[in-house]
Image 1 (cartoon, rainbow, N blue to C red):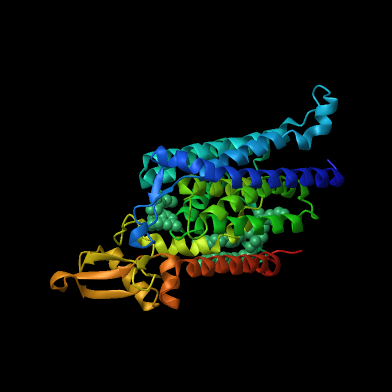
Image 2: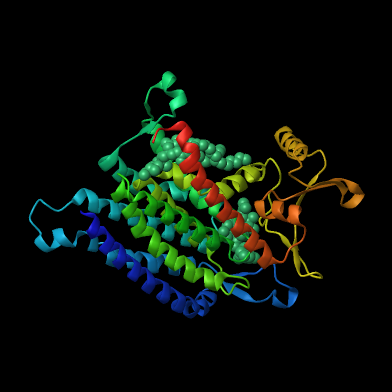
Length: 410
Ligand code: P6L
Ligand code: UD1
Ligand code: MG
């Protein structure tokens, strides 16, 4: 396919994305009541008491996912219109077409499994299993069609391991883990109105910028493929963001987090920029690393770790987890000691009855920001977090284009 061709198909994709945006924007409110009737709702935990009984429809990400999939199904034949018009037997590029099918199968699986999670409230270990399962179609196609498992080594290491290193099966493990990481990292960096969708919008916009920069290079078709997925994704996400923005009229649910994480993983893997993709996840990586002690239960992890509303001031305070002093495992104690050494946590010993308990703030980036800036209004907190996401995207670009020069030629 020539370059002129792909600019036409990109333009068609952009128009279809605009239509998807408008459709999503209009149908999400219409679905809200149906979701509440079907018992798919949550309570906004950070709103004052008079609002506490108000049901907010949850898992509206499934509407976005459906509109996204429909858009892609309609779009899919378009990049192949020339071959379809002629349809010479044996000439159709099946190996290219199968990429679209596998990508959409993986995303579709993930939306379905994410919706199941929202309806059934699955356990944490399932949250690791589901993305692994959903990424299998993708990995199979990667194996059949691409099967490139070598990574280019930085200049400084070439004397030791050579120009490149074949990771073999480890590379497939890495790709499976990428899907698990992307989905769950977005899901746990959440809890204030608009954050889950907001961060996804910033990431997809960054990916689009990266794709348009790289489209001039050798790997053009990979980046065009990524653009085809990212534009409709950004469109449906923006529509959802408008409804999910403070004060939320709908919640996105785990469905959306899985859908968005999987879309990023699919695009990163099939278009060969998974490492650059990870660079756009810096806040999520930091939030994940900070959360590790609670995720592995070295420190108790309550069901919700989102910041707590101070009803008098109307602002959000840090939320805490409490444990009996001295009851932590040695690893938990070590985590507390290391984090306090770097002043990353607030520890209050001697609380509760008889002062037998210790309180630590929940280990999330949200709480960390609140520690730095003091109590904030929910909307301010989201804006700060999204601003951090944007700054980190700029950092990612400078790492990718400046720092990478020190390790790789060109
Ligand atoms: C395809 C191509 O562009 O080269 C890549 C360029 C290009 O290098 O590959 O993305 P690709 O593009 O497929 C590599 O092969 C860079 O973008 C890179 C291999 C080594 C990757 C190393 C790290 C990835 C970071 C993952 C990066 C080169 C510069 C390396 C600097 C490394 C610095 C990373 C800082 C990240 C991140 C900050 C993380 C915050 C940590 C906070 C800790 C408190 C994940 C980090 C995980 C940490 C456990 C198509 O055209
Ligand atoms: C993850 C987090 C949890 C956080 C939760 C909500 C971990 C390990 N898990 O759990 O700490 O509390 O997301 O984001 O980090 N809600 C709000 N306001 C919002 C978004 C959600 O009040 O802006 C509440 C609602 O009650 C909603 C519920 O969170 O019903 C949804 O939580 P869910 O997505 O099921 O939580 P997890 O993803 O399991
Ligand atoms: Mg969630």
